[in-house]
Image 1 (cartoon, rainbow, N blue to C red):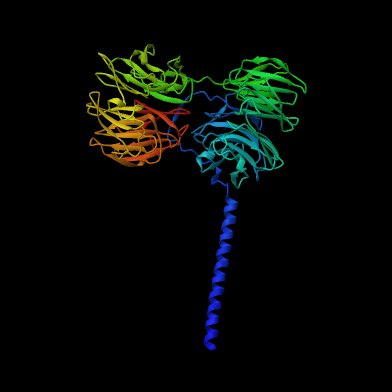
Image 2 (image 1 turned 180 degrees about the vertical axis):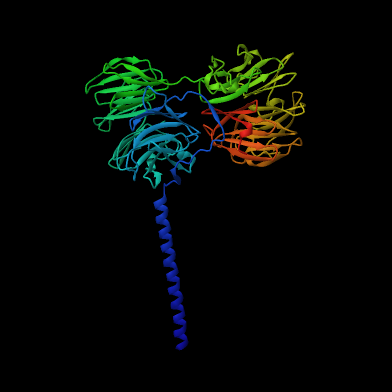
Length: 639
């Protein structure tokens, strides 16, 4: 019996222990589940004072700010644009400019409003950026909300709520909510949307999207309205008044009455921005001016024809209604006419979206734009921002891919999306070569020049131009892929590399000798965007694996700091005696020190982390981005 009692006690102890273990385990699982539920939809972020930007010596070349938003804060006028934030104490004095990349993070400012976040004692200026999250400005210092997910940093719309919460529209993640401590998705049905506009208040607001129409959140309920309810599912702007909502689209404005579609106003009019007081609807178009509509329950009547001015946004203050446009600020008079009260500065550069840079023999900088032709600018003696530029733009000189100086033929060769344009060094267009003239395609992606011929890269293959005429090769002749992005001569001049969508082809005397791909070599990503010769090797830029070294034996080697999951932009590489530069998509400028064999990233001082073009002259490096051009003395690079 005693033995039985001992055994029973042991069994009971074991059962109790197992029960306790199971209970603890269940409790742990329940706690873990609760924590998972609590954190579901939340995003990691950093929030605090904006750290000083340590500019190593970059100087921007003045380009248009193209104001996109405006408001009055603490008695001052603030205008936001890709170049930064302009602060006007009065319309008669020059502004203080807080510049993107120098005073502000390296991302364009796209939206602006005022409001109070939970815990704030006074309203603040709230600034949305296209890539660096949100900034709060109290008139003296900045705070930054920087989500760790890059998609959550691409902000498109802001709506401060009276509760102190902030609704945030994003380009990829839909609608987010920030309360000062937590950043999370607002609602599963509004996740993953491309948000374009927000309007409303705490319990009743509207969400416009790029291609999914408009959503209405009210009393905890969500209604959606798509193409069947709107003139177009692309929403550009939203305005609210007197229980009605006005939804602007590229082909008209839809009026909603008590949350239901009521009527379509100004059909066919591109409604980019809206403002209303409940009696009059004011509509700004990108290219059709500003139109006013008198609102009536029974009919609509146009109070006047559209006035010819471009506006991105409206804002109200005690002095009336103002329109923010790329050329300045306009005020609506009591007569309904608009008058300009502030003219935007006219800098020498035409645009900010840089696609190519190149120097002519006379020392002038040629700047090619993504969709606005090219500028030719004198940059000697640091007078770039004081000198007018020569602008060239036509049906061919529109989308620029590459600019190369041909010292042998004394021309500037400009690769465009519609032909190869040949200029003399003064900037006069001599000729445009197209497919009808013998090229294998009209779209030119790169140009390489030697003593004998000019080689043209296209999405259909290569064309060689020499004294005898034109000869083309493509995949039929052994090219690894027809779509060629980049060309590079060998350092010894006895061959050429063609970087394509499908790998690299090595050519000699217009013949393909060898192809290198991920299947037969150490190349980590086939899509090759840039190639430069470095001593007896090449540095190869890819769209997906960064930069790799290629030796004469055809061996690829990864390089610390440059090889990895990153994209190098087409032809955004440059070699100098001391460095190799590579422009990336989203990682700034990669700089290789040829003396130490080391790569370093450089971001401070850049107006954007999307570096698209690089050029050098007289020891100065010019860096083009999708948000302007900066330059720096090579000797000042912090490496």
